[in-house]
Image (cartoon, rainbow, N blue to C red; front, side, top):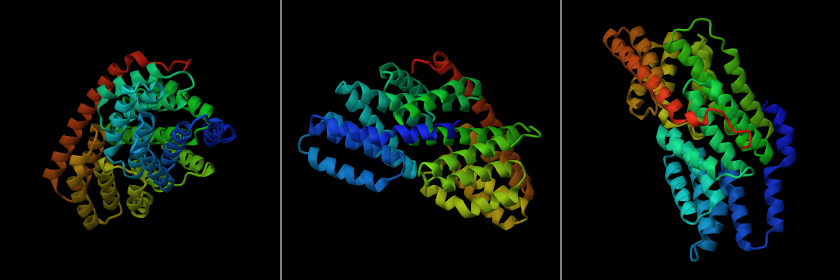
Length: 378
């Protein structure tokens, strides 16, 4: 369905809209805010240089005469740059500041947008209660044409439901993301939708195989989803996710027993994927899976070294399911290395993390119970 929207996205055009609004603007403030909105869009597309130039100009113009609207946009831009360059914790800090500024100045549409992005930041930090509160605020404050806020809030709900194992509840919200992305001509939002779905499908496949022992899982849907995200990005000129998608493919292929191909992908792309924004919170899981691939091809020395690195990163693991997957792979690695005690310990930790994850899943569904279906009016 993402490909069906490409022509619509190109035809409507996010940048064309901003250019038309700037041409019709009655004040320099309006022009400057539209420039900041353009910079935020370019930040979401990974064009950091253009964002930096715009922020320098805006600071020069407004540092001596602060304006709440401009300051809100600047903080949103800085948050996006942190998010898409290095998954920095500064995302949440900057978005919180944008939210506080817009709320105190009664800038309703910007408050809705910053609240939607704050919901995303809180999801990344596994702060699900706060995520639900900010989703509520974003949806409540958004008018029907606030597509940026509604697409991001919808994606936060969709991803949370999918993470909670309720794809049935997520589907309507995924459709809402697509609807608003098309209406806005926002290819970055469509890309985020496709990448999120690909990531969640890969994670679900790995959970089914590694943690629940499901036999005969079909990997093709997950691989097609990853490839679709990559092809869409290429069609609209987004190229910064190539290594990240390759790592996603490696995880899928490793799970279904194609360790040699997976290891080649890890070796070629893991380092560069970090520069594309692959978070440090995923590192233990990725390294543990890479170690298992090394075991599978008979390179036990490399597996021992990579496994030790994975152990050292476990404290950064953000959520219980990633911890469970990392522990499970490490249990397999240590078993292959003949370290029965460590293998048993890691297996116990994997089981405990999986139980905790199931509890978190139930809590998410409870928190989002009132948003169980996406409103068609949005």
